Image 1: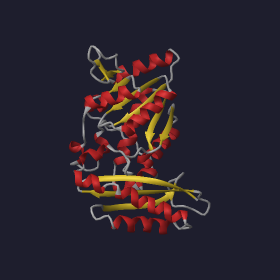
Image 2: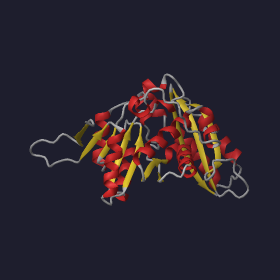
Image 3: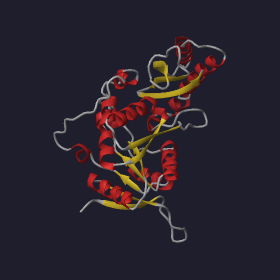
Image 4: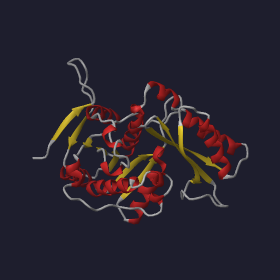
Length: 302
């Protein structure tokens, strides 16, 4: 018997109306069966892959999927293959009950929460590598990270079948990697990229923000401020990508709590060095606050 349960978005008292609920499945066969049945009934499927610790950014993906699809499934799996630092995996925040509440309230009706053994099994060796895209920028800073992303996404897409898959643009290079693997492997998936959701002070929402101390959280918006300065430089006529990157790096250097890791200005469509015909740039930046590594990006239209 497949392990599953139904969880309400919020525990209701006798006087409260019924709350939205999600069905939770933990086995691949159960997810595949549920989504196959939905499609057989003529329903479209939206898939929101996550590593849990859901926040308003994830909720925005789920809400959009719920508008555009008949059935929304959220995956909650802390994928060990995409962690490049041994100390990072055990520190990653986990809150399945909170995730179920967020998913239900945002419009999901199915949550897939497998164990590592269920996802990969004993002795699993296969990995998916997206050459080029996975090896530079964030991939160079975190060796093997995008192989882990590509592998788990390929598995999830194979289990889920034809669907729309929703990802946030905060992980801009990740979206590019997933789009490339879907295209090159002829997977029956449409990748939908959604805008970054931010707190009022500009900090991009991330599950890792929960790991920040109050002092670090107060300093974290400095990453966004530095990116905005790069956009402002372009707005007053700077067209040299190196000049924009230097301005962002200099701004990061004034944020004393942040330890800059990298700043790149790339062609937004190819993630390569901008050429003479580039019309859209993307500034990608990363910085450390204590042990927590934050990433963010902003676009520039020339």
